[in-house]
Amino acid sequence: MMHQADLFKLSHADDPASSKKAIRKHEKSGKRSTNKERVFRAVYEGPHRTANEIAFFTGMDSYEVRRRLSDLKNDGRVEHGKQRKCNVKQTTMVTWRVRL
Image (cartoon, rainbow, N blue to C red; front, side, top):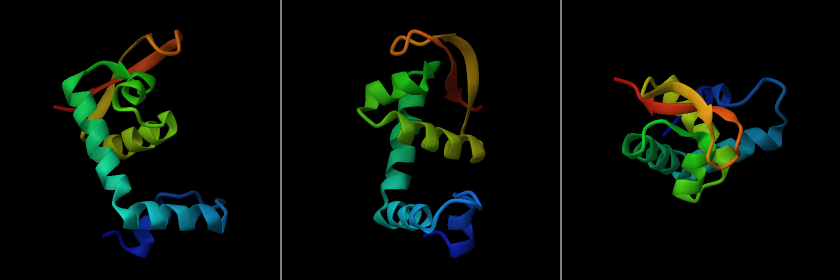
């Protein structure tokens, strides 16, 4: 479980109290950790997917996927890959891969 100081690192200084409360609830429920592993598994199994493709593949909300990709990047577990046209949004986006 994260300490209070760690939870505040997940939010911005100007975030409202409701955002900080939501972060605590998400962490306490175990969803954040579970979703990080779901996203990591999706990157591992299908490298060079965009965030939107990972969201489509996992059935997760694209905002949640982006947040967990950011967590995984900060943890040193994933990194940006090449940019290419996303099969979901049809725009150029960065892809993700497991960091070696």
